[in-house]
Figure 1 (cartoon, rainbow, N blue to C red):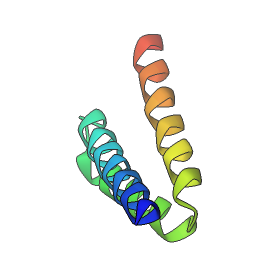
Figure 2 (tube, rainbow, N blue to C red):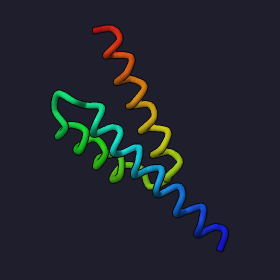
Figure 3 (cartoon, rainbow, N blue to C red):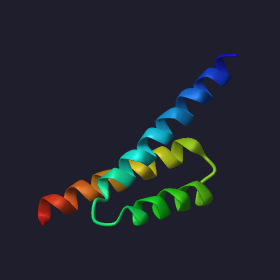
Figure 4 (cartoon, rainbow, N blue to C red):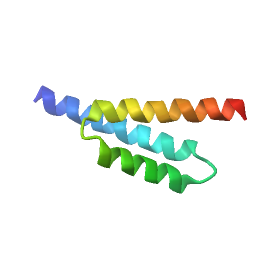
Length: 67
């Protein structure tokens, strides 16, 4: 039961991070949708997906600061 609860929490976090990536790419949200879909296809491990999504968010913020 506890494992199912943790899985649900992790899935919710991943969904929220996916939404953040799509919102963050303001110029072309289609790129954000494609990026999150590719992350879903490429990585089966959910924790790895969370780390990759966080990396995309951080890189997006860094690129905005440099601009």
